[in-house]
Length: 235
Image 1 (spheres, rainbow, N blue to C red):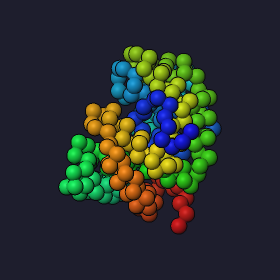
Image 2: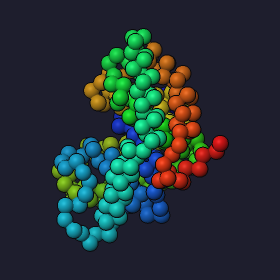
Image 3: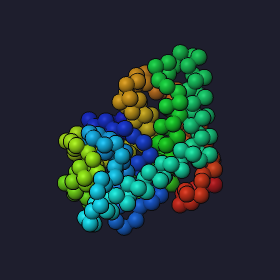
């Protein structure tokens, strides 16, 4: 599969791999819980993924622990200097490009926010390519019925769309496209479309692909918070 081919499934790509890489252990249920709050947005009902009542179901408790870790990571990540610096610089670059007639139909702050997250996944893939194998093994190790039962116990009402998305997400292994600049930009464009903004034109894709190596270097060099100690970047 080439970087620009797709499986037909469109996903709201964020830093799925970073959540998994930073906190995963030997428990596949816990590890899937680390990304379930983002994946479960396709299920209708209560937005936050948290059991509505106490349970002694060990599988659900492992998923719950992973979800809690996800929310804790989101809280510190969006307040850290890395996120602030990288997202602000991307926002400023997009804003400057608007003066040339590009990215007029997209929100610059949104692109800065999302791309700052996606770049973390790219850095992990570049430095630890086998991390994706662990990621997808965990996804395939957990029964979909277990996930749906947990989500309904957490306030989700209809998991039909989630089930379809989860199968496609697991089977397509779409995050592997992040290793290519073209694939990462295409993923960002599709996310933009899912938020009711215009996808990128060919000219916008081209200029962003040209700029991406500079942002990867920026993300690489920007100081990470202590919670990212596992990211042992090479100088």
